[in-house]
Image 1 (spheres, rainbow, N blue to C red):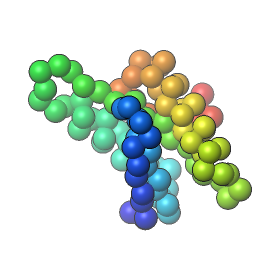
Image 2 (cartoon, helix red, strand yellow; image 1 turned 180 degrees about the horizontal axis):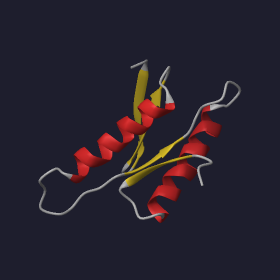
Image 3 (cartoon, rainbow, N blue to C red; image 1 turned 90 degrees about the vertical axis):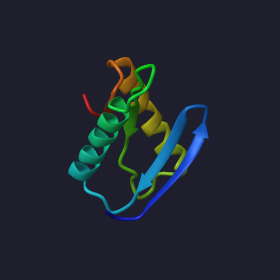
Length: 89
């Protein structure tokens, strides 16, 4: 996999920046992350929702985060425990 960075944005939201990674690899990674969290033995069920976006060359950090956040909320409103790419219908 290529280079990555991560940060906590606040509350229960985190950002991960992956560089040099193909979309199908990102899909596999996001799906695996959802599965691993869902299958953890916990007293109360835990799932995650993931918002993904492709960062374009002239995107600012703020623009990229806005797109990822929109995709995250689409995942949450579509039933949670899933990932969504920005602009995906």
